Amino acid sequence: MVPLRRPRCLATPAGIQLPTAPEYINAMSLFAIILFVGTMLISLWAAARVKSVYRRYSQVPASSRATGAEVARAILQRAGISDVEILPHDELLGDHYDPTNKRLVLSTHNFHGNSVAAYGVAAHECGHAIQHQQAYGPLHWRMAAVGATNFASQIVMWLPMIGLFTGILSWNTASWIMAAAWGVIMLFNLITLPVEFDASARAKRVLAEMGFIGTDEEMTGVRKVLDAAGWTYVAALITSLGYLLYHLLPLLTGGRRSE
Image (cartoon, rainbow, N blue to C red; front, side):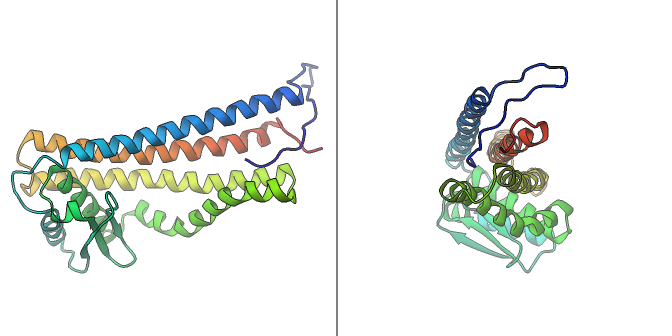
């Protein structure tokens, strides 16, 4: 958080006394603690859940016995995509689609494995490749916003420390910058939701249509893995929205003012 100058006591036009400066600062400090702890717990819960669900269904073999890489290759071929390279990667749950280099990266377990979880993850990343091929709007918006979001992430990381040790920015200026940076991050996370949910919907549909998933139990496993992963993006949105409101609302309501 940026360092604060002591705000003046405020009163409404009707003469109703608002909280004094110490009371207001204490209230905002309590809110900051609740925000930090609350969003951290939500993020930890989402990350723990996706790991737990993935671990469970990575032990459940799919009836078709194909590997995750073979499933991904078949899905891309069906979609008429021949210029995307499928690569293994050592990082657990580091699976992703790289639209710039047209690479579909699967963790080693998902690349070589034939579990329900591997199928879900592989099909999900194929969903992103298909989005790219079809010029799916939200995916291209997210790609365009990557640079600004990375810059905003650097601001929210370093500006509080710069303000703390140098004091070169007024509270109002620093708060507007922080609010703008968190706003960029929040919008990026908001755009991410339809991108991820659409890719998961495509994955569930194509696995059933192509016969890779043959039973209701297997489809339940795929759905649980992808839904758990989706909650990590919801957690990111909640976190960024919370910090945006923390910095923005006092500026809009006049709850804090510079001396």
